Each structure stands twice: as structure tokens, then as C-alpha cells.
Length: 402
Image: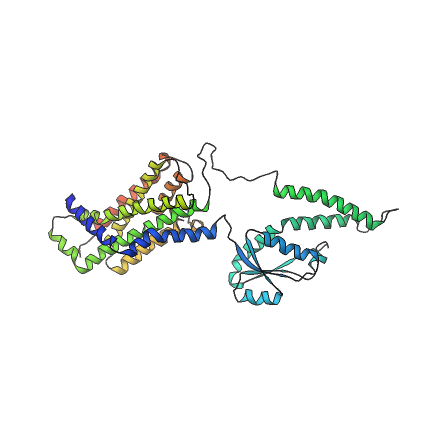
């Protein structure tokens, strides 16, 4: 029985390896997604390219554009007029434009203050907060300085200084006070007394590098490992359609042995794919792999078992190629989104816990991001094993040769 099961597995593996598209999707495409997502979300905030227009003739207008240009998250394209910016943003060429108005320098020290105009593409109005937030962050020092200047000017409003030249006195006080306060403001912004430091939740935990790749790589590796579900289901459905499975009814090979033989190659491929992606990303992107390789290997093996088990489930439930494709697509993409494996920000709390992706991610993160050992994978591995048993049991029960 075991030899026949291995024979089925060997034939299935050989057929899979003969298709170059399979190699590309499983072993190469994940790096394309990791590279793209990593470039977009690296360091937390993407670089936003916007238009900039300076209509102010005073010194503050040029100073504002200089500060915006120095922002690491803003890339400016300078335009001559607001009308030109309006037309280009309306066409969707850029998501926004910042306009320094004509009276900016004159208004900056008045009671009303000065304001910048931010033109937003109506089609991307939901992203307006990103642009305004980045602009305010870039101009934080200028905003504080303007408040200081206005406050100092208010001290002299409506007052006379006997025996002194009022203008000279104001200039002297302004210069002295602004210099002292500005120095303190710079120190407070550049080297604050209250600092926010990102570190592991425990000082005893293994210190690991926190980066966007800690989130992206395990999730995308899982998403593409679960592509094996559709490969397995398609192989079984195709053989059922051409009548190959019907001929197996005359052999002593049981349904369980047949399905396990079909699933074995995809289990092996899922293991190899996850190890390959993690190791390559460790070299290319400095992805930490933790200090517990045995624990990491355990969660990879159990995750791959759940992939094979889910493939058996889909093979047992699907009756034709259309059903197989629909179910597999939901598993690969739907569960990938629900669990946060594909895009961490879209994870649906609570509902994510019914997916194997969630428990696999928890186990992997416990090792590579939280510095845990075998204790960090025991519960996720137990849940994944329980899911695998359930998948195989339902798949074998529902499976039909024709």
C-alpha cells in the first residue's frame, strides 16, 4: 500500500516539475511581491510626489518650499502657477499640490496667520490626510517660529517705551528672545526630553531588527505556499474529468492512500518553498530567522501539512474545474486578506483566527520577530494539526472517483 502511495506521489511530483509556470509562481513571484511591497511601505511611510507653487514674493515662501523639499517623505515638482497645478491635479497626474499664496510672508505674523493651500485630486480625496500630515511635519519648526514671532510682536502692541527708540527696542528684544527660544525649540524637536523608543515587549527577549520585511515576508510566503491547494485540487479534478480516477476503483488502493499520495508532493513543495523564501530574504533583506531553527522548522512543517490537508479538502468538495478554481481562489486570496498574510493592515480580527494562515503567521512571528523558541510554536502547531485532520477527514469523506 505504501509503495503504491509513493508511486502516485512520484508521478504527481514529476508532472508538477515539468511545468515551468509552476516554478515561477511558487518560487519566484513571491520575491516580486516582497520587493514591490517593501519599496512602497519601507520605513512606514511612502514617498509622495506632489506639485509645489510659490506665489509669495517674500522670504518665507522660498523658505517653506526649501523645508518641504528636504522632507524624506515628500518629492516636489515645482510649477509656475496655481492654475497649472489645478489642471494637472484635476487630471490625476499627481495626488496633490501645495501652493504658497501671494500674501504668505505678510500674513505670517498677523493675528489671522498665514495658510498654505493644498489642492487634492478628487479621485484620491481619502489620501488628503497623508499629504497634509507630511506637509505639517515638514513645516513644524516654521510653524513654531511663526507663533513665537507673533507672540513677541503682541507684547508691544499699543504700548510706548519712554526715552527709547521703540523700533530699536523691539528689534533688540525680538532678536534676543527669538534666539533663545528658537534654540530651545530646535533642541526640543531634534533631541526631545521625552523619547519614544521601539523595542521588544520584554528586555529579556532576543533583540531583533524591526522592519517592514518582518511582516511582509512570512505572510507572502504563506500566500504563495497555499497556491499548492489549487495545484492539488486541479490535478485531482482533471484526472476525474478524463476518467483516470475511475480506473483506480478496480485497484486495492484506498481513497485515503490515493489522496495522501496526491498530497505528499505538494507538502514537500510547500516546505521547500517556505524555506527557500525565508533563506533568500534573510540574505537579501536581513530578515531575522530567530535563534530557534528547530521551532521554525516545526511551524513550517505543520503549516505545509495544513496546505496539503486543505488541498485534499478542496479536491473532495469540488466536482469540476469551475468549483475547484473558485474554492481555491477564496482560500489563497480571501483567507490571505482576512488573516493579514497578504496585507497586514487589512486583517479582520476574530475572523482571522479561523484561517490556517493566521496560526502559521503567529508561529513564525513568535520565532523570528518575538525571539521565542519551541514554546512559541506549540499552540499554533497544535491548532494547525487539528485543522489538517479536519480537512483530510472531510475531504476523504466527500471524495468520489467520478
